[in-house]
Length: 639
Image 1 (spheres, rainbow, N blue to C red):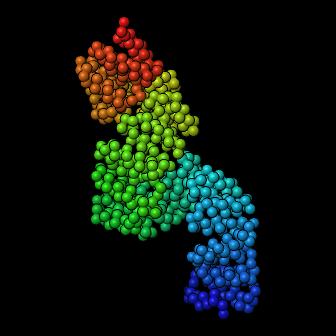
Image 2: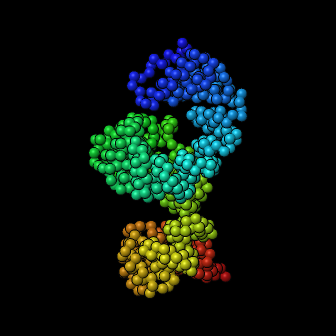
């Protein structure tokens, strides 16, 4: 009796029907092989039966005999597969490499080599082998999918997206390709297209929980909590044991709905389904902490860290928790621990989250230099992380360094030209008054997404700053037709009417708006200035001080309050307010023009000239600055 037949004595006493059928087939094929050792078909069927039972080690011997009796690409492929599944990766690879050398035109061998390379994380080899398999069988949708998946793993998103699409064109029911296409589009920053892809997949009725799970992830990122919850619940309907869906549903319920009780149940389901799921243990700890159950929360956190003792992720999450609680010192310690551990954390994601969190903690402590240095380390270590560039741009902006903020924002867009990235860059250009660069960005976003409110409002603000009343009014009127109750649009229409010299329209608009939405601070500042221009400086000062109480750096609040203070014979305080406005909005000409007027009235012609010239350089079409500078220059010129 050959050794691979001894395994028959280990048959289960009471197998299920499918297993019983396979065991019977093994007995029959074993008998055939004993009776006819040259029966290659029986050897192949015997090995396949062992593979179907999940016993690849028992399939190795019949497949070895198959190769000896009837060598060929199929026999070698089966032997290699049985060896790989048995944990004999080195021999499996050698068998397969030799088979490819002997049969280079067999697509299945190249596909198996690609699969093996993926298992060993040999991404370049996997791509090359799958590409050769596709070349040999170009109409095979599964091969195209496998190639795209390997390219996706290597970060070649454009190639992967094209591959997934071609696979779906050949086989529209290929659910895995639909899911992966959605994920690749999302990673590319094409969030809207990714969502549409997954929604279309969901509408096909394919019972693939991964479609709904990934759709939920996208919706959550968009802030659509209700949609995300519905998608995660649908995924769990299809697969109640989907632990990632339980975990993410818990996050959505806890962070989006503040439903800690339901979130806790889903985190518990995730940890029960996978006791080694460290993220779920940590989230369970967060939920328990929010519920005031610090004892259980501590145990859950400890469990998470025991599962990943050298993982930086849990410390990063702990730092985020401390940030939310306002415990900045503890947050700094947690983020520093995460960064220290990251070097030895082989499973750490390629992400600058810990650096960004540490920088935010430093900002909360007023340590702006430390925040900048931390983020500079982040972009050095993660040069391709667009979010790190965004955080550094924000930090520079908080420091008042708009030029460096723009440089980082430009690098962010080059890395990931998402809508948010382009809008943030446009806002910086607008703040710098570089309309020639800001306007195309805003218009580009509106071309792609005509109802994008942030782009509409940003472009309107740009036109208002430029004094382009006609373009601003056209844009805002069209937006108001679509969103008649949107306060961000109504506030800008009120501001527009005020700056066009129509207080009869602006005053009632802005008063009604401020009562309805006092958070529209620029509109509130404009209302205060209207009161001032109408001869009521006390009412103006009250409104403007309320604006600055909400935001001490609100540029129009500072500028307009400076005018009120000067009228109230407080030139020193007016000067401070104008200077603060200039610092808050470095690209604005008006604060410098106002300082020029103040200095000129005080007889400080040298200082007045510098401010007028600064205003004229910031706004080339300023109606008065250049003329005032010329006038002062002629008065101070030596005869």
